[in-house]
Length: 160
Image (cartoon, rainbow, N blue to C red; front, side, top):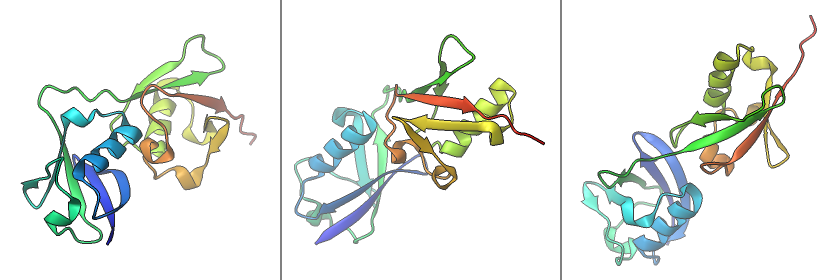
């Protein structure tokens, strides 16, 4: 059976995983690592109060097709998720510390506040792809942006 898992950390959707219930929990954790850079060794996944063990197949937990899986991190692991934003009128990029569920809109609002430029005048791009209004509600991680990646910021002049 195919599963559509939503991995949730601190009440925010972090990763969506499409997998077979024949896969092991370890495979899900490896996918989370691939997407978020969070090491497998610090991930603790649970469903319905039960911790999911690495060497157990997902079907052993009788998960519903659209299960929400809780992601907790081992105590002492500091989740360091940040991006850098290159701005044409600044020498050094701006470091923006964000949470796993931080949306594009929230990043733009933060940049707007720190640069004293209206949010409507800010355009962000990643890997030569303009991030548009339809991306605004998506978390950066859902847009394929990992920690320590560089975004480009363009300030657009608005004519009145």
